Length: 110
Image 1 (cartoon, helix red, strand yellow):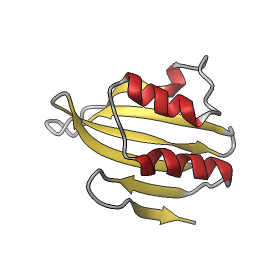
Image 2: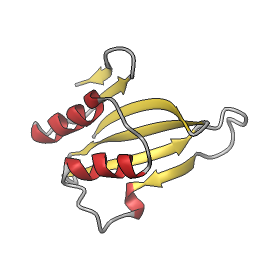
Image 3: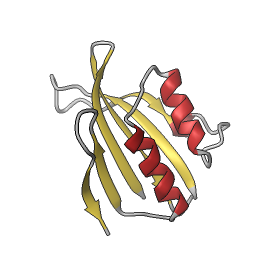
């Protein structure tokens, strides 16, 4: 499974976007999580979880892009492109952190 990470502040809230390609399921996924720095023991608060939206076509990269747009999140192009390439080349075990102001960083690849 590939994982693409993006940390941002959206509408005054710290969010983390986690998205990627799940090889065994041959589907894309998207999680948008509210970062809670105040209490590290508190469970993650999901703003959006693609598992709760099974009627969408998670084999189409446009679903990820459209859902982020619906949430008002405009990711760097590298995030959508990276997920799409992972899907095209059936990539797994890859973790990439994306940034708005500098190139993405591969944290793990195998």
